[in-house]
Structures are given as C-alpha cells and as structure tokens.
Length: 287
Image (cartoon, rainbow, N blue to C red; front, side, top):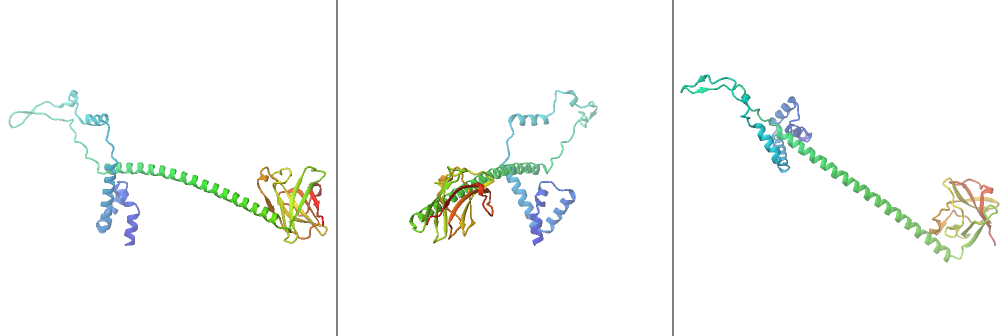
C-alpha cells in the first residue's frame, strides 16, 4: 500500500496526463492503472482537475485571430489551382460527369494531448505568478525582520539608559561613595574625568556626561588604573565618543584599597601595564 501511495505521489501520473512521458513510461502507467484501482482513480481525478483549471482560465481569442484561423480552413474557390486537375471524363450510372479531386486531403486528426499541453502551459503561468507572490512575501518578511531588529536595538538602548539611571541613583543615595575629580596632565591640561568610588562596596563608576576626553579612534581605548600597594591595577577600558554625554555612569572593575586613580590611552582592549607617557588624567585619593 505504501508503494502505491509513493507511486502516486511521485508525479509520474501528472506527467502521463500532460503527455510528457516516453512510450515505455506510458505503457508502465497504463499497466499500473489496470492493476490498481487507486491509480486509475487518481488519473481520472488529475484529468478532471486539469480540465476544470483550463476551462476556468481559458482566454477568449480576439475576433481578428478567430477570423484568421477560420479563413485558413476555407477553400479559396477563386484560385483555379484548387479545382480538379483531371477533367470530368467519367460518368456515373445516370450519365452525370464525375470529377477526380487530386488536391483533396483529409484533415489531420486532433492530437489528444493538445488539451493537456495547454493545461500545462496554464499551470506554468500559475507557477510563475505564485513565485512572484512568494518573492513579494519574502521581501515583506525581510522588511519585518529588519523592523524587529531595530526594535530590539532600541529596547537594548533603553535598557542601557535605565541601567545608567540606576547607577546615578545608587551613587547619589549611597554615602559610602566618594566623588573623585581626575584632572588633566601636562600633555592634556584640558582633560577631565569624574568618578565615584566606594571602598566599602569596592565599586568604581565613571561619569560619562561629565567627561572631557578627546574622542578615541577605532584602534585605541582609554584604560582606567588604580594604584594599590604601589602597583597599577587594571580597572577596564572605555570609549570617549561624540554621543557619550547621552549616557550616565558606567561601572568599572572593583577595587578596595586604592591610593590613586589614573587614565591612559592604550591600544584597543587594554594592556597589562600603563603607558606612562600616554596618561591623560589622574588624581590621588585624599583621606
């Protein structure tokens, strides 16, 4: 039973109805149809479906085209070459002359597969229309996916803003935080960075809106350092961009016993130890 179902679903029956099989394949389908009523019934259903589709999508020819086709079937009686080539030299039993028409030819029999070929053409046109509709649907889907990605990006931006605001509120209402103003060095006297540090909670935050640092390029980042027991400790990297002022405070790595903070301009991703001639701001911790 499964083999019969697979044979029906293979598409060979549709090709048989459309006349698109070799003689050997046609004989095989006919043999299968004679042995299996399911296949014979499926062939009948395919023929009815194609016929209904062709009738529903039939196009009425123009009057000019219809007249041209009909006129091509009429004998041109004004042309002498269409008349008998032999004289009326034979007579019937009543004595009347009988002509011999050498140029009369029988009309060819209609091709039984012509209908199915037209049906196949109609099916092909429907397929092309369906592909166009599918392309249009796919374009709309891509557009929708782009809108979803934009919404997700906006949601992430909103979440970041909420996080910055929460950090601002935490610093403003927590007495354990110290506000530290990092001033510019001789190399960058106009530079400035405000940070908040809680030795109790070991939290370090820098204030982006109040930052006055030159915008770094794609190959470099600013790196924050804390001096602990006479050694620099990496507290992470950050960027100074043109839109930095739209954000709030961001949290850096934690530290407890710092005596000084400083910022250097390093290659992107940071370095193990600070480049001293690239220091832009610094400030000691006052007791």
